[in-house]
Length: 84
Image 1 (tube, one colour):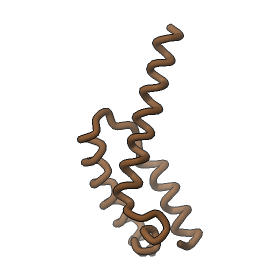
Image 2: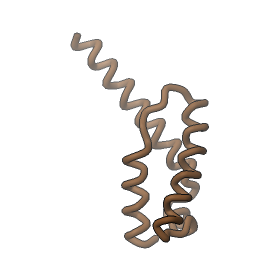
Image 3: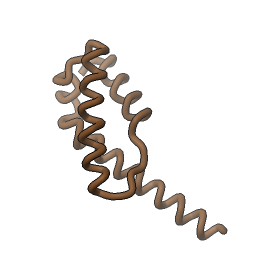
Image 4: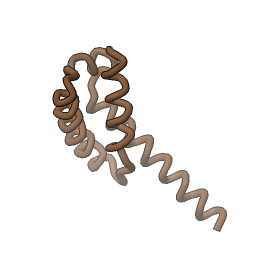
């Protein structure tokens, strides 16, 4: 994958992927974000195939990032309650 495609994907995920409270919402949000990412990549002249060649299924990648964000958020909430 080109460096341009990698940078695009990193920036896009960082901007769009945020904590979601439930697995059902995560999957639905990942599906929506994957379509949006593909459209924005196309606008930027980056073929979806270039991204998928490097990372595989972008919907799965986005879902994984959403789950990580949810877990991190839960950890922060737990730490705040313990400190408070």
